[in-house]
Length: 188
Ligand SMILES: C[C@@]1(CC(=O)O)c2cc3[nH]c(cc4nc(cc5[nH]c(cc(n2)[C@H]1CCC(=O)O)[C@@](C)(CC(=O)O)[C@@H]5CCC(=O)O)C(CC(=O)O)=C4CCC(=O)O)c(CCC(=O)O)c3CC(=O)O
Ligand SMILES: NC(=O)C1=CN([C@@H]2O[C@H](COP(=O)(O)OP(=O)(O)OC[C@H]3O[C@@H](n4cnc5c(N)ncnc54)[C@H](O)[C@@H]3O)[C@@H](O)[C@H]2O)C=CC1
Image (cartoon, rainbow, N blue to C red; front, side):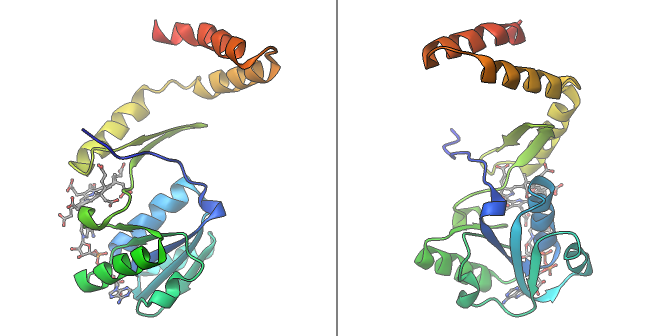
């Protein structure tokens, strides 16, 4: 059973720290900015890939070219680390625990408070997929399947439902009933 609790974060309201400026750091940044282009992010790493440096021009990304230190957690809400040093990753995790900051250590599920997911996006609809850490590749493939089958008309449907939702009068119960009636056709 998958006991992970899914949430959708407003990363523009939080300050995220990425530790490690290699392939993993780049992948995490891409996942962050693909979903949340206005996310506020700091990356700390003694060496930083050129592709990461190029992102600074387009996003709210601050680079600190230093070795990680606990002082980098000042003002930080969320951390993802993927350095090539197990000791550094463990230190980041321990410091985050001390400071009560949620942390993801990319290649060590046991050290993670949260995992990243595969993400299907179609306009306002977003579906996050987790395999409980069993197979990220399955998550990626399943995302591709869902991306194929979601209809083009989806945004229109969501806009219409929002308009109806805003117009509905009456108490909460009657609104719920009406919206369930209208959307029943989706099951057929
Ligand atoms: C636990 C978790 C923690 C976390 O990173 O948050 C984790 C851990 C690990 N990933 C590893 C490997 C790979 N990860 C990917 C890809 C993705 N990994 C992602 C999430 C997660 N990866 C979390 C669990 C998610 C879940 O529940 O399914 C995705 C969904 C989201 C994202 O990273 O943005 C993104 C797909 C996005 C998309 O395309 O939709 C690929 C495939 C590829 O790159 O093509 C491979 C290689 C093939 C393979 O191994 O499957 C390894 C082994 C490292 C080693 O062998 O050394 C570990 C460590 C371990 O398992 O021990
Ligand atoms: N590249 C990938 O897709 C995957 C990598 N991994 C593992 O994840 C780890 C990282 O991989 P890559 O990003 O490819 O390595 P990389 O060598 O490209 O990057 C490592 C980064 O960590 C930084 N770093 C080292 N010490 C640091 C410190 N004290 N503070 C802050 N940053 C520090 C380095 O400067 C470098 O930018 C490796 O252990 C690798 O085996 C696991 C799964 C997939």
